[in-house]
Image (cartoon, rainbow, N blue to C red; front, side, top):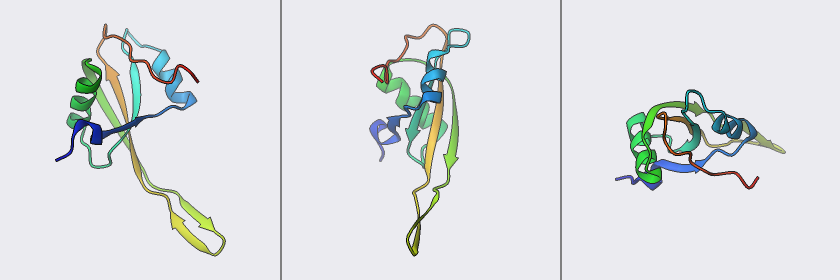
Length: 101
C-alpha cells in the first residue's frame, strides 16, 4: 500500500516550472511535481489535496523515458520518471516552494 508521501516525490524546480507556477490563469495556479511512475491521476489529485489542503481542478501527466548514458565502453540508461502538472481550482491559496532560488 502506497501512502501519499510515496506518490508525490518532489516538486520540479526548474525555470519553466517556476514561471508556470507564478503565472496564474483565471486565478488558477499550475504546479509541477515529480511523482511515482505507477501513480494514477486520481491518486495524484488526492495526494496533493491532502498534503497541501487545497482543491485540485485537473491533473496532466507526462512519462519520460530514461536517457542512454555512456561511460567509456559501457552503456547504461537513466531510470524513467513521471511528471505531473496539477492545476488548482480558482481562488485556492497559492502553494509556496522554490522562492529562495
